[in-house]
Amino acid sequence: MILKVAQLGHPVLRKKAEPVPLEKISSPRIQGLIQDMLETMEEYDGIGIAAPQVHVSLQLALIGSQGSPRYPKAPKVPFTVLINPKIKPVSSHKEVDWEGCLSVEGLRGQVPRWRSVEVEGYNAKGEWFRFRADGFHARVVQHEWDHLQGHVYLDRMPDLTTLCYMKEFARYWADD
Image (tube, rainbow, N blue to C red; front, top):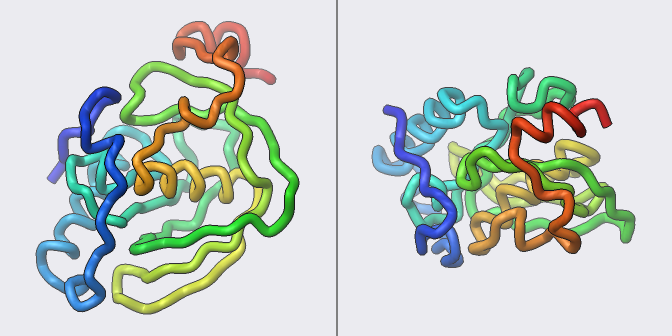
């Protein structure tokens, strides 16, 4: 089922999400939510979605893309379910690149993010995992993790002069 996406201004986006109890991961509610989030992400051509974005304040996010019309030049991102994730930077190097968000419809802005992060958490089967994400993959993980902390990419922008509507982004900046 395709879910309604919370838009900037809705309080659920500014609240730190609650951890998913590990014994509940296999429940029909959580498994159904994962499936519904996947369908919603695909419907809106997203490359990630967090539970707060669909009005559910839980530490659950999905990432993944084999190609997206919203990010046509972006590399592929492996499909991953992140439950109660933790991230930490692997180095002090940050990169600035363009980001958009299903909850901040129609806008893009340049955001600094860690180039590489270590990610750990639980998958859809309740199995613990750890992996390293680099480049665009790391950016997507950090973007969704921020949603679980009650933040949106606008909060990470040190300079709002790059904030632009998608029409203007496509016209002036998409080839950068």
